[in-house]
Length: 452
Image (cartoon, rainbow, N blue to C red; front, side):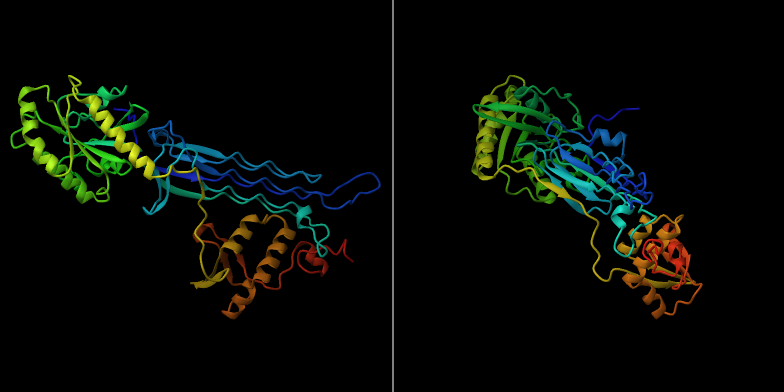
């Protein structure tokens, strides 16, 4: 089985690290057995970050390992010691990587060395009992659990960043030109679709250094998916200029330079968005006498269209110097008119939902409570601790969840679920329930042992 070396589209599952849990602790020293709460907070979970690395040209690493996760935060400790933050996971990606959600919508276009995008934030660490103490709750006997990090599926799609894109029919000599003008060594043979991946070469013309990409897969119908179709047409979008490489020595019947050029231009037009790119035409393989004669014949027609035409041969290297300098001038003009991209940092937050803090809806015999706050509070709660459950009940009551349930007709003993589907926390509705320290007839979440 062939092992791919170039991958330009991957589906990546990312998850931020889980936040560390807070701790419930009481300061103790000689002659002072109850010195007050001193439990530290948990550390935040590590983010998952995409960062542009200009040295990369493929997404192959994520093809083999499509699941990535940030580091978990450390738990808090006594004596006000907070847990360590989880390690941020940095995923290097090539310049020109487009990030989409699993529905296909573009989230970011990563261009510029060092540009970063936080695709999954780590969960927040839970508060220790020292942070939960207040004038009403002097000595909390509980702490909050850390929250899970964001989890999402994204699609990474690479669009090669090159200054010049060489376009043309298969076997027109594009790969040979890249090899002749640079140190790139692509696979070359005389049959269609020799090139199955874009080949990049670095070319120097005077004081201008630029990159050239041999873009494969263009035949009639490529814009509609024929041949390699859209798999490689998208790599042209980044190019500052296009060079039509026209085979003047093709043995195929019905082929000629003008028709070949018209077919490729028609496909580029149907693909769209490329009309503003400067064009050059390289009439290739003029080391063959018949090809040179044909090139000289069609040259005036092409120049009458406003195109700069050069006669070249990758085999004999004729005309390559003129071609490299012509491309260099185009690149210099485009760079002068377009400022270089600055590194940026993008943070992908969960989509905000407009409306109330929570909703309550009847689903059969169950009252379903949804909302970012109540669902987050449930995740933070240690249900093995009665006082923590009482604290949760207080928070929900202050938010208005209990009042809303009563308005809708909920009765004592009804089933209430907070959260989606099977991940919900289910309990029996009892607005008067008291737990833990509240059995001492104080407000839920207070401790009358220290607040008489």
